[in-house]
Structure formats: structure tokens, C-alpha cells
Length: 196
Image (cartoon, rainbow, N blue to C red):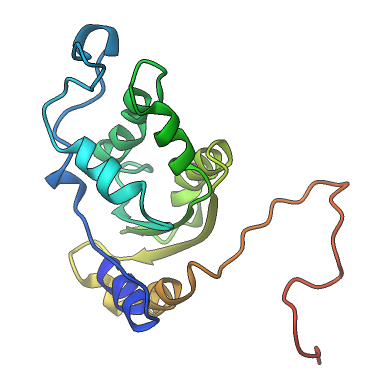
């Protein structure tokens, strides 16, 4: 699904790169009071800083493509989120910059599992929704695919690859809403044209 998303984004003229978390994150969060270096940097020796500072923060939108393991995302993804504390803590010399650049991003979840149970992704969606709310971002779409082996989602009759491709094309224009009972709003969601 990541490939389909990237194809859609590139075809729409967006700059896109596909990264594998395993290439950047090899260690879990520790106690920053124990391993932070004298100059305030994270003391964990892997490529997380590169992932965050050179790829995630400059991005306007991020799509997370992942299998569902035991009704959640793999631990390595949770580690990416957990380790943000190293860079958002006031003890990190670039914390203000990281906090500012982390705000307002758009996210898409591209999930696959061997089960078609719609509840499979509920916990993941809730976690990402809360993360987005906390960072003033927006989870704008979730694509669920059914398949157990690499490439098997291509045979899913719901055509999740086509949806992932379309998501790549429109993610930057997509909107997420989270109305409250007193939210002022017009009677339409999309502007332009008459409804029939």
C-alpha cells in the first residue's frame, strides 16, 4: 500500500519519499536523564534523529503503512512516537523548533491485516487521532486492506491499493473534521457546484 500511495502522490505532482522505520530506529526509549549527552542531544545511537529532523519534520503529510500485529501497530512505530519526548523536552536544544514543526501535519493510515473485522483498527485509529489532536495535526483517512502475505492485498475485492493511490493524490487537500455540539458550520462540506 505504501507503494500505491507514493505512486498516487507522485502522479499528482507531490514530492514523496518512502522510508522504512527499521532503517532508522533500532532502540527503544530510555530514561533521558540517564542517556542524554552533555550537549543535550539524545544519546541513543541510531538514525532516529535523521528520521525526525530530516524527514518527518519537513513533511507536510505523513502516511503510515503497516500491518496490524495483535490489534495494534508494531512496537517500532510506537517507539517513533515515544522517542519524540527526547526532542520535545525542554532539555533538548532544538525542542522549540521540533514542537513548532511537529504541528499541523496531515496523516493517513494504510493498514493491512488477515482479518476483515472492522474493529481491528479501532485502537490504532484512536491512538493516531489522539496524537493528531495533541500535535494540532489531522488524521484525514484510514485505508484498511485484508491480506496476510506480502502483496496479497492486491487481491482484496475492496481495492485498497486504488484507495491508497487516490489517498496519495489528495492527502494534502483532504480535510478532517471534529465538530462539537456548538461548532458553527455551514450546511455544506465541499464548496462549489450544486447538489442533486
